[in-house]
Amino acid sequence: ETGVTQSPTHLIKTRGQQVTLRCSSQSGHNTVSWYQQALGQGPQFIFQYYREEENGRGNFPPRFSGLQFPNYSSELNVNALELDDSALYLCASSFNDRAYGYTFGSGTRLTVV
Amino acid sequence: GENVEQHPSTLSVQEGDSAVIKCTYSDSASNYFPWYKQELGKRPQLIIDIRSNVGEKKDQRIAVTLNKTAKHFSLHITETQPEDSAVYFCAASTGGGFKTIFGAGTRLFVKA
Image (cartoon, each protein chain N blue to C red):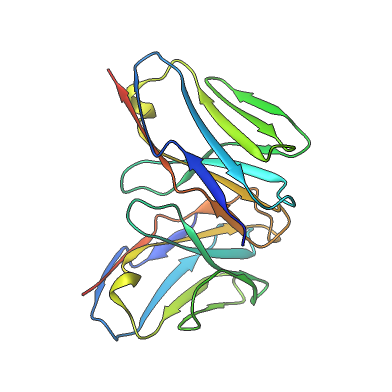
């Protein structure tokens, strides 16, 4: 059984650019949730994908968008990057949108300069 | 919107002492309450969880209590060890719902 993997691990982008982060869910999981964790803060819910559809969204602007693929892997896209987007981006996978059994990936550290 | 408050933000204890972290939640529909431990530079790891039909759950040195009426829950770590030093996050979820709301975290230092 494989765990949740995220790529890349680190990324530096310039303000105004676009970025795509990737997440492969744990074997047997069909739900992926994305979180933004600023330094010294708890993870903030961005959105969740269940069976390839967005199944809930937190207080993030439309320039944060996502996709889920038939193999349940997922992408997080952020357009028009701002300095405040600098954070650790975590994805978590689970089965049938249940909160229990959440398994987190190691995250992508995004720095916007 | 839904909110989870966590206290204290920093906690320093002597090795062997107990540590208690408290959280309150606002969404009365929440029925699942996990606790995560995050070591520096690592992913959050689930250490214990509790569902709303249970008032207390224990796993070795770790216990969690839940008071649904007051909408608060607590993490208790007994006989703390230096390796318990980390950031601990509480969270509240509707379980079958689509999001888990996290507290801001408690940085626990265990002094040897």
